[in-house]
Each structure stands twice: as C-alpha cells, then as structure tokens.
Length: 287
Image (tube, rainbow, N blue to C red; front, side):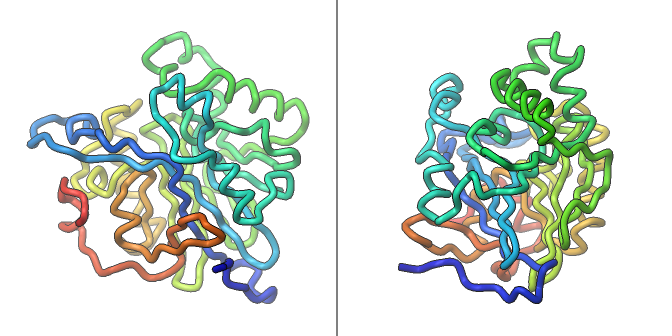
C-alpha cells in the first residue's frame, strides 16, 4: 500500500502539499462561474477541496470541507466524508495542531467541532464579516453556515482561534496573505516546497480562468478588490505554476495524482505539466 513519502527532519520549513477532492459539482455551467455572462455557455464543473500540508514535524490542514448535513441542506453531495479520508490516511483529526481557514464559507469551514485540539487561523476581517451587520443581508449570508460560524465562536471562547490582520507567518515556511474580493477576509496560504513557494489561493480564484481572464466568480463581494487580488496572486507566488485555485478540476489534470492508503490525492509540491496563461483561460476542462 502506497504511503506518504518520508521527509527529512532537517527541512522544517519545507512541505509536501496534497489536494484532497472530496466532492464535485459535475453539472456546473460556465455562466454560473463568472460575473460576466458574455461568453458561450457549456459544462464547467467544480471540485471541492481541502489541502494537506505536511513535513516531518507537523501536518497542517488548509480548510476543513463540509460534511453530510451540509451536503443534504445545500444539495452538493459529497463523494466521501473528508475526515473519514483523513483517518484512512493515518491523520487523526485530534492530532492536528493547526488548521488554516482561507475563509468561512460553508465548503471551507465545516467540521470544526470534529477537531479536538487544533488552533484555527483566520483573518480578523473574515470573522468580523461573518458575525457582523453584513449578515443581516440574506444574499451576503447565503454562503456561510450558521453552525460553522457558531463552532468557530465556541473555539474562540476556548482560546483556540488565532487571528491575523493581513500578512502573517504563523509557522516555519508558511505565510498568510489577505486576498479579499470573494469574501471580505479571504486569505491565501503560501507554502514553501522543494520546487519553491506554492500559493493555495483558494477562492481568491475559484478557477484558473477567473484570474487568467480577469473575470471574477459569480459570487463576489467586491469586484474591485478581486481584480487587485488577481494581480497579487502572481506577486506572492512568483510564477504561474505556483498558483493553485480553489475549485478547478484542471488542477487534478495538471499535477501528479497518487492513491495513498486508498485515497486519491493530488501532489502540488511536484512539478505540473507545462501550461500557459492562455491554456488556463480556456473555458473547456482539460481532457
């Protein structure tokens, strides 16, 4: 049975990154993925992911996915419970010391009550947004799940939430970067790997085509901030092949895939297939 490759303890600030796709929206259409609709319509599915960041010293989760309750309420069936997959991989949720939430939307911040010890890293602006007066508006409230937000408040009162205001370096080889637009306090996670820094951009750009076309996703709180964020992605990552969008199935096509302990993972610390900005701007999924 294939297992995670070992890493040297001497490289504390260098990590492996694996994307875990636990659900899909196969019937998604192009017009649902962009604010602008002046393009041909057609199939453009989404993946739902969380990210495992690991080395010899620690395993970090970036986002925590959603579970069966939310799947039923939202109409997004899951392929498997993401925490069950973690257990198969030998990752005990109670052994996780740090969880970084890119933002608090339902598909990124569920399952928090299932981590017994983790510190939760979140931006001040995101917590303020999810618990403030903006949530009086049903349109802005829609992508948040009240149970998840309450779970985070409970963890706050248990001294398990670490707030960040913009750029931060909470762990060796890990930096956080405010990337607002899709949500007020969205943060990207820049991870040092053997191939250089990799930016987990999450929903700063749902799809490669969003930033490649400079065309924001349909659910966007601030379009001006989003366009500025698209510029920041390259500044932070340093190269096109180091930017990882939050929901694009092309990621699984571009990067090597492994089945580890029966769970398919995509290795983002390894080199992808060659690709250009023009390739990524295409609306068609890769074959």
